[in-house]
Length: 496
Image (cartoon, rainbow, N blue to C red; front, side):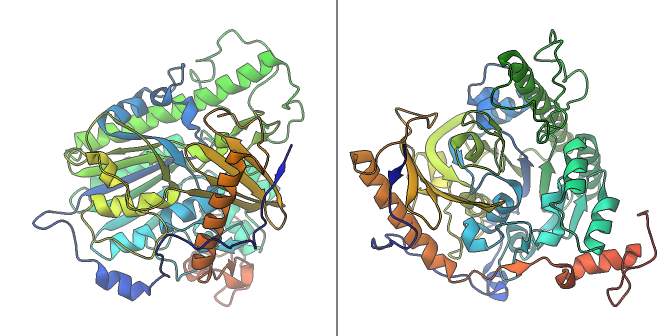
């Protein structure tokens, strides 16, 4: 049953964190002075594997051998056992990753909004000090129309349906629609992503670079190519193929246990298929002699539900199966190998951590803090309360999580569920508000809401309506003939 905890307006507890608002981008650029004294800038490779649950990786204790190369990466660096995303789906999670701000603060909450240009992204901060910045993405929610490409010199679409995407944008339709979703769910992107990354690295290895790699294929549909399709369940002869995961009504909470096991085996096959390509990227870094000079960070934006709480997929809840994600950082000489860190880390902590590891000055306009003190046995500078939010497709949820407890609210109401994560890590037994744990969670929620309120003063969500296309997207549509110079539709019907 649900306990009744305070609504969003009950903000009586003063925040214990000293927080400041965002500064102007020119001020940010001037504030950046370079790498550590006498040293050169390290390369930064940031790999985001869409929809990857931490608990399906060998290095996080999974029994199947889904991830030998990711496991090796973890052994060569540091693994965060309790990394919490800002949400349970792609777009706002990456906006939080790139800005160091909670979702309701960076303002890019759904696919009818884009990141405001006043937000300062990781790519912009790195470009300001001399980095070459490049991103390769493979899912529709990562398109530059949503503003998350700010600061990238190059930001490339590795999907197989880029032409359809441009036509959709030119017609003023949403990238969240059925046609684009269907194409994305059926797409196989790892080979294209890898080929683009390999080509770019060979040509750009001689200057400091920030390389962002978004890998989509773990995302549904669960259709790994051979031999990964039968790797973890070779004897299955039933009807489940992994196709149409979201729309197939036979994939439900009451499906036969044997079919569910095969579905999960296909998900695991997607992980192994993606792990193979991660390994090839890491091998290329070694071949080019870049291992020692490169910070490699691997994480996920969110996980996927397999009916642990009666639902499938993601973008529906804020339970741990969708917000607890992997975080692994390797940087030889700076990050001790084989470190397993139990402290709670958050999506908003990645930006300040990477700046710190690169020897760049800290910034006070983000909500996260650097995790680097943990590498030498130190303590973190601020509170580790993790705030996750979901304001999409009719859901209005916010959770506040610590290592031992968590509360999930329905925004605008006093309806909430709290959980003792030590005794109930699967979040199956809600607590009552008047229990000792419930009272602690009330305090967490009050503190978290005050913290958000202090930062929300800077929120300026921007529509992604066709009449407000970002200039770079408009130029691209014009160059392809989808719209004229004044914005009218062009005559071209197929992308080159």
